[in-house]
Length: 91
Image (cartoon, rainbow, N blue to C red; front, side, top):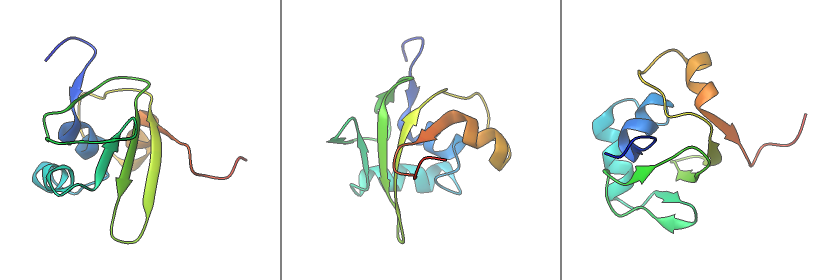
């Protein structure tokens, strides 16, 4: 993968949108994830800082901008530094 890019499934797992990397890959493959408004076709789709990711989970849809790619799966506070919510009310 090119520098400054990361696999989508790995980022979803690092950012805690999925419990396992396998589940993150399944979300992508089943069509529940969009990158910059386009449906992600493969778990290996490359993302970069600044991309907008939409995740349609079972009970909610998250619209976020990628702020960092991350290097490991940490706790929730660390995961929240990887993205900025675009669908949350300001304040």
